Amino acid sequence: MWTPVARTSRSPARSDDIDPSGPVRTCVGCRKRAAKRELLRVTAGSDAEGRPAVVPDPTATAPGRGAHLHPTQECYDLAVRRKAFGRALRISGSPGLPSTPVAEHLSHACPP
Image (tube, rainbow, N blue to C red; front, side, top):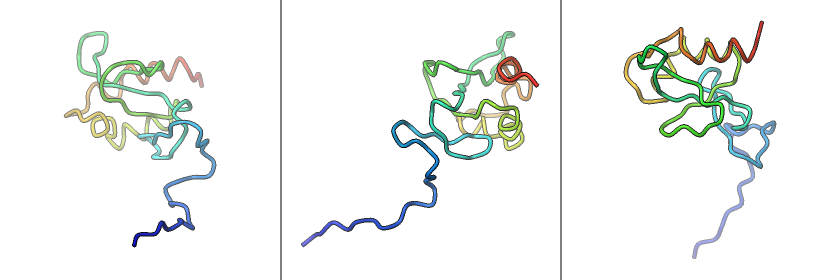
C-alpha cells in the first residue's frame, strides 16, 4: 500500500528570499532566481535595421519564447559573455550582440 511521505528538507535550488506568491524565473545573466516582476523579459526580434537581435519586452506580452534578465548592466554583460541569449531563446549565432536594443533599453532605464 502506498503512503505519502512528507518532505523534510527544501530543495537547494529554492531560495527563501523569493516571494512564493508569484511566478519565479532565473536570470540568464547571473543565474539567480527572482520573482518574475523583478526581471526584464527579452525575446528574439529585430533591430532598427531589420537584423536579428535580442529585444526587450518590458510588458511581457510579446509572442514567442522569452528569457528573463535582471535589469542591470552587470547581468546583461554576464549574459553576453556567457552567450546565454542564444541558448535561452534557442536561436543560432549571437544576434546583434553586444549592441542590442536590450543594451539601449538598460542604458535609458538605469543611468550610470
